[in-house]
Figure (cartoon, rainbow, N blue to C red):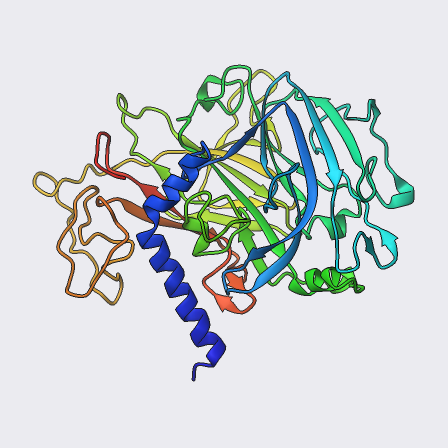
Length: 433
């Protein structure tokens, strides 16, 4: 028997999917209006940044709202996760942090002023207000921290390319789960279309994607918002997120209008590999800011792991030590860089080399939504009466999700959480919007 809550949840999800189906153009316009791509990594360009630690709310996939802390551009609106900071190798990166976090009682939590900070794992010789950054043990901080209304400036030289994390260093066991984190991308000196300073790390610039995996214990967030104590020994994640969203919001475009504080989508959109027309792969940057391992699995899409934690997988003489993976077991605090491509290994053609088996029947494959009615890329068949589809030009959709299935959940609502898709468009040129 369905309760009123479950009926509302299903109706709400249906509405979200309908909005996604009918608002694609609006989403693209929203992204374009901000000068950013509709899919893929959205960079905040450096090397000088001004961040503000703020309080705000995000929408969960079960239509709950969640009180969060996060980094945002100073003077800008609250967003979760923090901006993706993009710099070039060799840049002197400067990050000025202003502390504007508030709870119900103002700027104190359990009677103490709320202090915060930023640490940059993987970066060396970080300065804080012009001096070498030091632990602030009196304030339970791994680095120099700042109190309510104050500011502090960190700087370092981005000496190594790759994908990194930035996060709060003050009481990180509590503040990082509250949302104080983001991604840092250091582009190599070889150019922005390389992951590392290796010729075999070249990728298609328009196919640069991020899977930032995180988690939320709603009881912790409620306690902090209400200025009540929370025992972190009782911490238990009940929401799991990808780029600050849960499914189905995760496959909506960047800057989807119904997610004003969650700007980053997780859909990957590529074209098939072609030696002349599309010779380079895409790149996926896997990032884990949670408390446990996330075994993320992009179905039917093995990737070549070329680096971890900002270190290229190579031997002392530059030997290629990359390896293929079908599932990426990303540990807490880790980043993995993977390049990937899609190609028709069998060379299927409906006339000269047809798919040798009939498409599965409706018991195994539902026509509509993510299936065009045809097994051939770029071709669409007539769907049964009453069926609709999200396919616009016969593209393929291949699911990607966390393989720890208990994490595909939003506080008891299954088939949510860190789920997204790989969208394979027909070969260029095509009429895909």
